[in-house]
Length: 227
Image 1 (cartoon, helix red, strand yellow):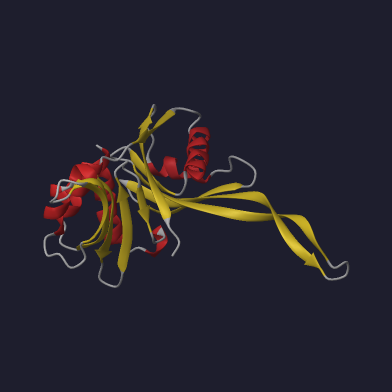
Image 2: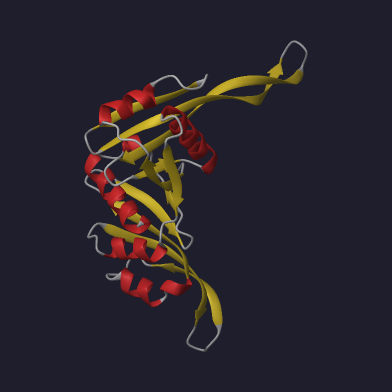
């Protein structure tokens, strides 16, 4: 199952723009081989994707010469993002390299009159938010240096999928937990996610495959943990 990182940023405009102006600037041609596509927007937020092309080396077998040949081929990389204009934050669904490309493109679109700062998600705030939701199923929890009954320290892997109140156990060992795997139980499907002590988040579902109400819940979590 493919996974994606979710990265959070604070955005500060140095000038005022209407949502229409923001969308027009983002979708204008900025760099060769790149494109920003806004899929949905309202007066409060927008969501879209950043597309760029890159060359990579691929090996192909030449049946006439009976040898492998290395060729340069082009591929298109798509990175999804969501921008809450009113709350001044953006979440980018991809790696740091692709996130930086989006930030550079946005800076160019607004003539460098915008500040974009990386935000670190707070692990304890993520746990606090999830514990208040009624559709979270905790799976595996990895903890380090847990004190056992005999006084020994051990790194542990805990399966909390059958626990009625898993967050009570998580709260007890919160300072020792390295990561928490869980499923967001949705109407038609589940969304598998992992949160890490560092504040990093991995999600095992593409943004465009997630229903609007479920996305809003994820966005609320990001905003809650990023403040």
